Length: 128
Image (cartoon, rainbow, N blue to C red; front, side, top):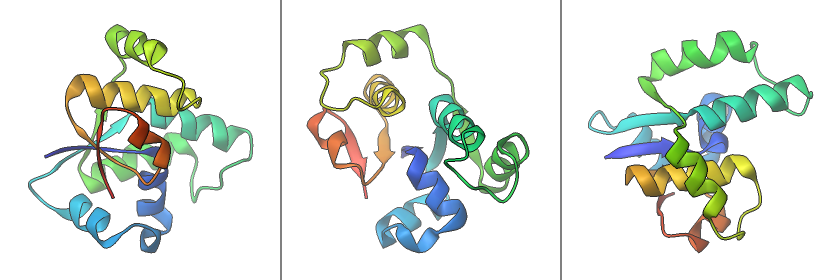
């Protein structure tokens, strides 16, 4: 299964894995799952870190690529079609980063690991 980690899911996996459900933890460590982290999440983490709204053990520039390599997580780039889809989504969710993740999940036909209830208002496959 191709599995996109929502920003909070990746952060919880990194610093507070006990906050993830047992199902989420098992999905992350399953060898047959392809784990993805969106560029939107990387951007969001960088912005929140710079604004002192997010504490991390290292700077995002060091931590993110290092931890992605350790965990075998691939980057999901943002394409023009992702951006256009995100802009066209109904406004159930107003967070632009989450709207991008929803668009990517729909267009790439992948599952998103999230406990954000707003994702259920969209036609996406979620796992939690």
